[in-house]
Image (cartoon, rainbow, N blue to C red):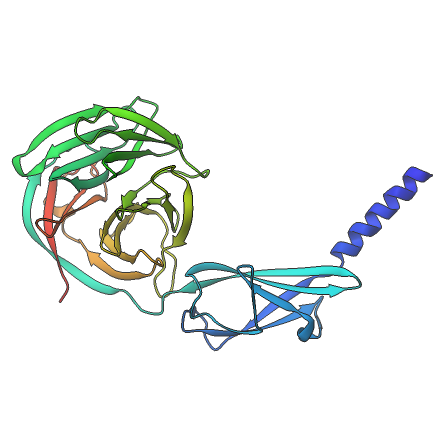
Length: 339
């Protein structure tokens, strides 16, 4: 009898906690939310109007008013929470909204300055200049490498193969350390950039995949195939924060190879039929521009395994970009036309 009474009390208690449903309604003149938008919040309890003066609202856990401007909102997905006390119970409702850029990206073209030979078997994942040399990471299990190249003299100075179980991904050089990601192994490698001698390894901070990698001299920026770019501490490889990549009307997924010049991240998206590189504000994820590299793929050797554009390296001394793709037989030196 006592056991039956405990069961009844338990289910009554659960019912008391779950019998209320707090729904959040958003009122705005905008169908697509941007940093220019203002919203008004209203809640209902199981379809009944309640005293909204007693409802507390939170935006990403920070308390806000019922009328709220999104001018300081982070871009991408945000969470709105409503909270009210009913019959001694704390009732909480949640809703997510996406906030997009308040400007459309500008469209740019390119001019080819030079063409250089590239190993057509290289499934290029990452490309970066450091001290005048071009470093390349390639993928595919059993074929993944890390390469040091004197591109102007067409010489591969060093090449090291990864173990067959590793699928190489993006790379970047920071604090005189060459960092290379792997795809699904959740491990990265640290090399001496002069000799490509393996010095150490590290595990990813989160349960993510490794795709692209770049740095701004202070932090590493890592893509994982989603719309997120993660900011990483290069000393302990812990994630500091992240932002999402957005245009004025959508989030951009499959963010892949990364390169940073000043405050702009240059990125391509994997498995895109369009050979386009995004210009992204590294402070907030806003897509500032789109560089249309249409036509580059038509200039490389055609073969059954020819794949997408992938590989973006900025050469500071020449103020040009070096662009290639997966199993392309050329690397192109280009200037971006901004007129």
